[in-house]
Structures are given as structure tokens and as C-alpha cells.
Image (cartoon, rainbow, N blue to C red; front, side, top):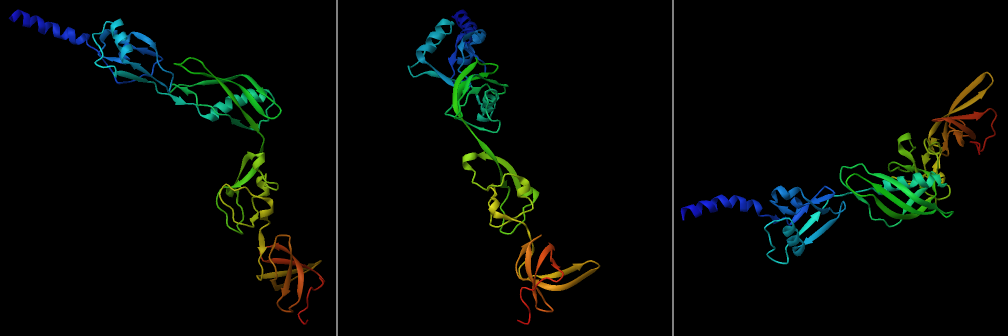
Amino acid sequence: MRALALLLLVALPAAAQEFAGPRPLAVVEDATLRLGDIFEGAGPRAAQAIGASPAPGRRLVIEAAQLAALARAHGLAWRPLSAQERVVVERPGQALPREEIAAALRAELLRLGLDQDAELQLGPLAPPMVPPGTAPRLAAEGMTLDLSGRFGGTLVVMAEGMPVLRLRVAGRAVATLPVVVATRRLSLGEVVGPGDARLVRLRAEQVRPGTAERLDHVVGQQVQRPLGQETPFHRGDLASPTLVGKNVLVTMVVEAPGISLTAQGRALEAAPRGGLVPVMNLASRTVVEGEVTGPGRVRVAMGATPLRRGAE
């Protein structure tokens, strides 16, 4: 009896070594599915390949009958306790951004005559998945581009640890125009500084006639209505900055060869540099028209005809 007990004790580790149980969830990163991914404690058999792993970002389910067949085929002493036993195999994946896909298609479409400033609108497309940490290579095959801007072809995705993936793609190329937009909220009367505007491209169908298309048309101008951030500038909403305000005291300068006279006046209207403005001479109450030459300065021509006399 004592000898039998000793034999059982010696045999137990070997029996335990043969036992293998399935993992409810198996997360794999390799392209090959191995026995040890499915059965915990598979021992020396763990490295045996049993098939292909799911594609990156996908999963597969191994049901009880398939698990039993695998265990039997590889000599594992395991049987399912119920038909509900199963193993879910998941493989992590990294989605390719649509911007990278569009860039790969653009390279081929440019060869077919695509406008380099056109925007590509991709049709419905599930993002291709690649193994995390890999450097995928994208290419386009059989691309077509018609006169209306519609394109189609095949996207080829290559990455280490996965078979080459080919996907049908389609979409439309849309013309774009340069547009100047505000980088912050601007209040009525503010002068646009270099950091207050930036150049972007918008679809041509979104651009109103008269929208500013160059930064030098906007920077240094005064806004005539409040503007929100990212709002396009319209040329009708811009004007030269006001250097003389309405009812503000100004210096009237009368110049002639060899002579320069100054007098205090009051501007009756607001005006920018170079603008003409009616000014009242505070001494004579005479109103004449002058040209704004700087902040608070108005040049009046010698012998200018009064618009209105103080005695009237």
C-alpha cells in the first residue's frame, strides 16, 4: 500500500503537466496562432502553430467542439465540461488615418491630372487596421479620374505581420480656394494684426464672392463688424484704419512753397489715412475739406474754398 501511494505521488506532477485548460480570452500579436495562445499550461507543445491569427483589429471565436478537437489532435488531456465553453481570440490593431489614405491616393491621382490644391472626399471606407507599432506602406493601383472629379481604384496596404490588404476606394476631388480667416474673435473697429489672420483653403462651393484671398488684403485693415474665430474675412467688412475720429480735435496744416501754417480744428467726420474730411477751424468757425496725413493731422490746401463759413 505504501509503495502504491509513493507511485501516485511520483506520477502526479507528470499528470499535472499534461493537463491544459483553455483561456476564455486570448490576446495575440503574432500573425500565427499557437497552441499556447489557446490552452494554458500546454507545456512543450505551446509553440506548435495551429493556424493564422485574426487580422489586426479583428477577433475569432473557437467553440467547444473545436477546442476538443484541438486538444485531442495535440495530445492534451482536456475535454469541455459544456457546449458553452469557448475561447475568444483578439488581435490588437491600429487604424490607418484617412489623411494617410488620402495622401497615398493623391500621389497617384496627381499623375492623372488632379489639381494639386483639390480636396479629396473619400467615400464610405472602414479604416484599414495594421499591427500596432508597425510602419505601414500604402500604394494605389488602377486609379481612374474623370472630368467631374470622381475617382476610384484599389488601396494597397502592406505592413509587417499581416498579409497584403487590397481595398476598393472611391470618392470625389473638390476644387478649393485660398481664404483668409480670423485666428481670434475681433470686435468692431479693431485693426487686424499679423497674428489675427491666417490663410486656409476651403471648398470653392463654400466661398462667398468677395471673400479675402490674400493676407496683405486683410492685415492692417479695420473690421467694420465683429468677427468670430475661424470666420472668413470679407472685403466688404474691411476698411483702412481710421486715423481721425468724428468730432476729434486735429491739427490743420496749410503748406505752400516756403510757408507752413497750423491751426486747431475739429474733424466733422471720421476718415482713414488719405481720406478727405470736413474740418472746422476753431478760430474762424470756417469749415474746409482736408486730407488726413496721420493720426490727428489734416492737410488743407492753400486757398481752399470753405464748405461753410462761420459767419453764416
